[in-house]
Amino acid sequence: MSALPAFTNAPAENTELDLTGIRADFPILRQRIHGKPLVYLDNAASVQKPKVVIDAISECYSSYYANIHRGVHLLSERSTMAYERTREKVRAFLNAASIQEIIFTRGTTESINLVASSFGGSTVKAGDEIVITGMEHHSNIVPWQLLCERTGAVLKAAPFTDAGELILEEYERLLNSGRVKLAAFVHISNALGTINPVKTMVDLARARSIPTLIDGAQSVAHLTVDVRDLDCDFYAFSGHKIYGPSGVGVLYGKQSLLEAMPPYQGGGDMISLVTFEKTEYADLPNKFEAGTPNIAGVIGLGAALDWLSALGLDTVAAHERLLLDYATAQLLEIPGLSIMGTAQQKAALVAFTLQGIHPHDIGTILDREGVAIRAGHHCAQPVMQRYGVPATARASFAVYNTRDEVDALVKALWKVKELFA
Amino acid sequence: MNDLRDLYQEVILDHNKRPRNFRVLPQPTHHADGVNPLCGDRVSVFLDIEEGVIRDISFQGAGCAISSASASLMTEALKGKPVNEIEHLFEAFHTVVTSNAECPKGLGKLSVLAGVRDYPSRVKCATLAWHAVRAALEQHKQPVATE
Image (tube, rainbow over all chains, first blue to last red; front, side, top):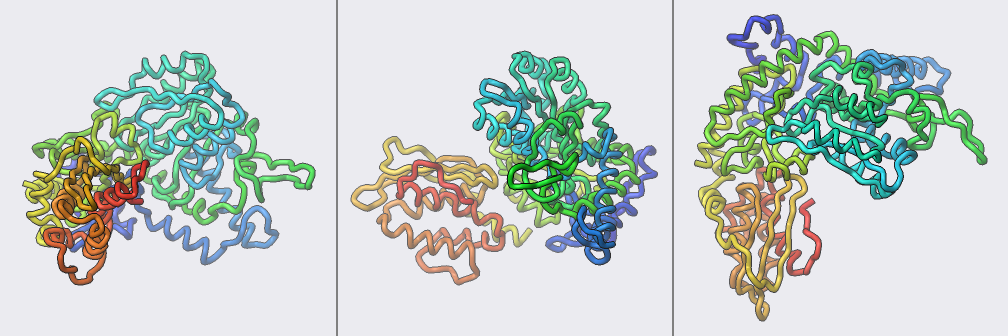
């Protein structure tokens, strides 16, 4: 298959974005699925990888791989340097104050579990409260429920409107109890696309001396994140949603908090001295990185951040905004289609239902047309319950998607309707 | 589109649109819920068993066309059957939706679901109601899951 043509009739501000060139960076996009060109619209689940990321991982394993932080030999030194260079890249990417504040984890889920276990375990007591929102992914619900079960604390969720916008007054009301030990909330909802007013949410918490954690899994690949500007205490994201490999993620934490927190896991690389009587822990960030980490994965993440930064998040955001507007308008032309999540501030994903047709059937039929979407509850069952639906279909976009691909989605949806007519 | 018609046969589309025995039995002798954690689909099955024979059977729930049609066709297939035939029928049905083996005899209309075998991610949709019936007979208190 030849690369799909770039924008036809593209608005002026977007003509400079060379989609053909961008798409050429992604080997996986050059294939056919069931005989049709692949239209990959499941980017909120996981995004595809540019060749520079694949090459960086391959180069690590084929030319300089060794364990890090302990070898005196050249390969270990080279691997350590490449691994630690990524930490600096992440610091710069998030505009964190120091590399001590960047912890590598397995992903957003582990980052949140780390905070729930270490920060939560050492500060949360019976009767305390954790505040989240009603639009969280399960990974920002269940770790807090586990913490509450262990400690006797209570989990409270701030509701959102029919459009999918957080009700800020309700969120603020929950913060006012005097018992809240942490506010943890999603930056961009994976089920609705809502971009939450996280800076305001952090400010409201900070005014009450409540620490904050932001789940950034869906945001870092789509908009600029500046943790010092946000002034949040923790920020979590995953490598695989930002054009990097799976199995690697990041926890940003303010140094003062991280220093006060006990280790999350014990093992090698997180100690400074071990005797059978007592162990002294390593300084940050190693205190939270027990065991041999995903070395090549971290290095791949570094390559992904380089690739994305060279492209520029402003460029990405502008292109994705056009895709969202185009897709929304085209999808609403289909009779019986309803969009779930219509927030004013919204990321490039569209969750929808088709009257009388279950999302799973939509997903199967679209797949036969080469169109990959997600169908299900998107690990956000409370959101489904809020709208009274068992599941939705979701098309989510990345910078390499085109308007022609939106057209392919719409055409395939008409086939769904035809089959179920 | 043609290969999709192998999956979404007319009988399936019809049972999806007008599911048979889609109601709650007021006083079932056996009842269980099935859930597919993958997609959140739920089905409840109700059986009225007398002297080892399924006098009545019904279901409720929300699911995709495959799971709804499969549940509907299952209730038709099982009504009036001796309980001890269920396991044999489920095995035969499972074979049809998971392997390329020739359709076992005696499946009747259930064989329209054979197209599912080409869609491995949908097998659990087709077997959800059957798992629930099995759980009902074993008197499970917790909803049975396909995962």
